[in-house]
Amino acid sequence: MQTPASPPTEPNETALTPFLAPDLKAELPAFEAFFKAFGFKQIHGRIWGLLVLAGKPMSSKEIALELALSAGATSTTLKELIDWGAVHSTFDPSRRCDLHGAVENTLSIVATVLRRREQVAFQNFREGANRALEVIRVRHGSKDPRVLTLRSVLSTCDIADAVMQL
View: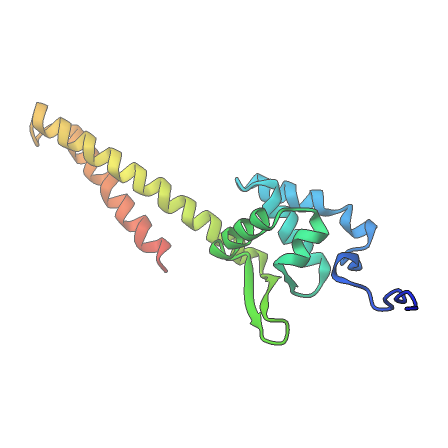
């Protein structure tokens, strides 16, 4: 007769200890609101806040478990945060997975967001000014006073683009 297997003494992956104490987890909405103010989704702020408050890099699986997110939502959001310069990832050979951490310099994150948004705004402005310039030239000729103003707009866009590349 076999004896029943004894219960495991080591915690398994489904019984992970939470990374954040409840009082710290209660502060995640502040991170969500901060990111939302810059046009991100709440999930971006939630994941970045977790990485800040956890104080150590975390795997995608740990993030998903801690925040009760799907693997897909976690992966997509991490990729976006990495693209925006808010999160860095390094491969951990011992764990055989990427570990993600919050970029510590929040000013660089905000600067990246603003720079990219300004680039899009100036690009859109440039394209509209070019279209308007062409219409005015065709309809009213190059001596129309609006041509000079639109050329000034285009020069300003070029200067702004050069400054943003610094």
